[in-house]
Length: 129
Image 1 (cartoon, helix red, strand yellow):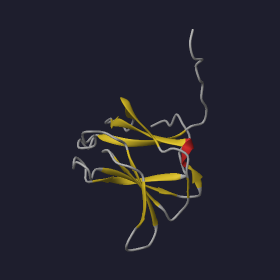
Image 2 (cartoon, one colour):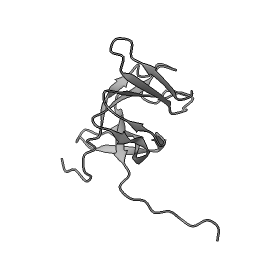
Image 3 (cartoon, one colour):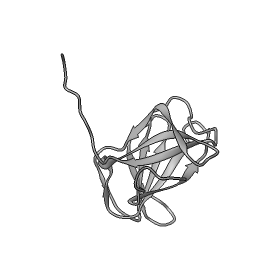
């Protein structure tokens, strides 16, 4: 398989927890270094038999501007809610909980996978005519 883009090494997707369970379905991510999350986003894609991923339409999440550092945890719940910070009881590590705002679960089908990306450039259109 050929890689078209450089690998995102600053953050690592650990997995998906509670697939298909309303209000519990979430993507688990860990930072590997201090990082500004405003440079990153998630989209959903279909994992194809050849190992490539086909992006799904209208499935984009942006973290917003925030700096995180290891050994933190990032939980992206697919349902509605508000950002919260807490501590993982067993370790005391900082946990950041984000909410995608979907009104239905989106990861119940295991062929649908979260894809993490880093913004490396942007073009912005002009407003109006």
